Length: 320
Ligand code: GLY
Image (tube, rainbow, N blue to C red; front, side, top):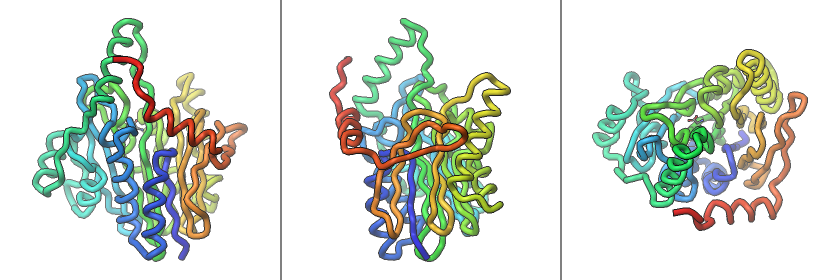
């Protein structure tokens, strides 16, 4: 069967690229997902995932993550874990449990310590500087703290047709202590069924959860829609419903993949990018246009876009 792996945002490309080599050599989708997401978690300049993720209102980095096996439908999830290095590895292990497979806060930390996962202070000096600046801005100008969040969500199908989904995030910058977003919530931040396909979401968790958008995409694919049609329809309908009922919709972006290695994406916001590799398609970053008339258009990221991205994430901070 044809293998494929797709992840939210440009930040997934290094992991997607490495896992693509493994998948081509016959690797298990779960190992490919874990490797791809660990690479994002370990990179200190990605400020919304793992090490270097931006902290909550108390300047603590609280991480959410999930892993789902599309054959057995087993799920492992954690919410608000602090001081552990690779949440994706913890949730992969948790997915082996029949009970107690979604743990939060101190309970998740006790489990991770017992299982021998590596402890690490996930707060970097760079993240602390962002926190200090945002705190001062919020106090001075009353700015909303709820900006700047992106989850890495990855869906994979391996050569044996096995599908797996994984997510990892530090959630919303300056979130309340204990706030958990969509990323560890089955059906919202992710869902996968090897008989159909999978999807993962990024954006404002509070709004993504109102539509269980990842489950909805898989449901639509089961009805016969392509991943692109399913992603567009689910995001468009949720966005329209939120605007109709509540006057506005937060950012919602998704990646979707079926068990034939076909993929699709959708976004209701500006600036969404994604990373994908398929057996017959080199690892590539694409940038998306905001959905128009219910359709999302994307194109290969230009050299200029990629350079600007690389310069931006590592740019020295101009504030103390
Ligand atoms: N989508 C990530 C979050 O809302 O926490």
